[in-house]
Amino acid sequence: MYEIDVCYKIIFEAMLEENALEKIADRISKYTAAEVIFVSGSGKILAYSHTCENGKRECIQQKHITQKEYEHYRKYGYDGEGQLMVEEVELSGRFKGYIAVIYKEKNEQIFYRELVQVIGQAVKEYLEEEQKGYLYAQPFGKSVTAWSLLHEETLPENMEERPEPRYIGLLLQKQEIQERELLCIESLAEIYCVYEDQNELFLLFSGVSGKNLAEIYDRIREQKIPCSVSEPFGELTWCAAKYRLLKRMSLAGGTMIDPTMKREKEWSVQGLYTYTLPLLESAGLSDYRILRLIQEDEENNTDLYHTLKMYLLNGNNVTAAAENLHIHRNTLVYRLKQIKECMEIDINDNGTARELLSFMMMYDIARRHK
Image 1: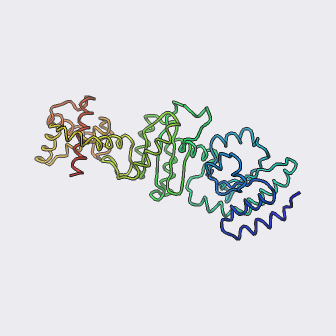
Image 2: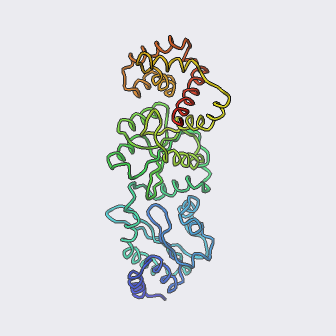
Image 3: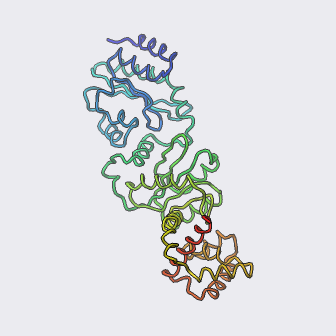
C-alpha cells in the first residue's frame, strides 16, 4: 500500500528542480507504478510520466487531447488496463487544467483520489503560468473541439457534415486587439468554439445567415478590429483549410476595400489576378473602357475609377459601396450615372461586371509592380 506522506515528499522535492511537472509525473509514477499526465485548460499535454510512452495513447502522440479521445472518456470512462482518476484544477474560479492518473488496482481508489488532489494543489501555479497568456475562456470540450477541427483529427460522426447552420472563421493576432474589442467580437454571433495559442485567436461562428453576416462585417469595420474573415461554409471539415488560408492572409497587408478587415473573397480575387497577370500582359489583353474612365478622372479631377471598383467589389450593392466609400448614397448614384455615360456600357450586367473587375484588378496589380 502506498503512503500519501511519501507522495508529499516526492512532489515537494520535484518542485525545487527544473521541469517540475515532468519530474513530479516521473517520480510519482516510479513510486506508485501509475501513469501521470498534466493537461492545460486548453487541452495541451504539458508533461507526463515516461511510462505513458509505452502505450498507444492518442493524447501522448499528439501532445494534446483529441476530440475522439475526449468523447470516449466522457461517455464510457477509461476502459484500458487500469482505472482513470482525474482532478480539475481551478484558480480564481477559472478552469486551469487537469491532472490525470491511470492506475491498475481498483481497490486503491481512495488513495489515488487523495493523490490527485494533493498534486492539484501543488501544481496550480504551473498551470496558471501556462494559461495566463490566454484571453478566451471556454469549456474544456470546446477547446478540444477547436484543436481537433484545425488539426484535422477524426471527429464524432454527428459532427462530420452539417450543411446548416453556416459557419465563418475569424482570425485575430492577439497583440493587435484589446479586451474591449474582444468583448465586441464575442457579441457578433454565436461562437461555436475558439482555438487559441500564444499569438492568435481563431473564432468559429455558427448560425450565420446573409443578414447577420453583413452585420458582422459592419461591426468589425465600426470598431476597426484588425482581422481576417472567411467566407461562410457549411461543413466543419473545411475548418482546417479555412484556418490555413486566413493565416496566409494575415501575413500580408490589407486590401483596397479595407486595410483592417481582410475578407476571403477579396483576397481570392486579388490572388487570382496576381498569378494570372503575367499571362494577361503577355497576351496584350486590356480594356479600353477602363482606360477611358481613368482618362476622365485625370482630365476632370473626378474619382470615377475608384468608385466603380468599390461598387463592383461590393457586389453592385449601392448601400454597401456608399458606406465603404464614405459618401452619401445619392452621391454614389450620381457617380454611377457618370460612369455609365463615360463607358457606354451596362455595369450591372453580371458578365460585364465580372469582366470589368478582372481588368481593374489586373490594372491595379500592374501599377503596383512598376
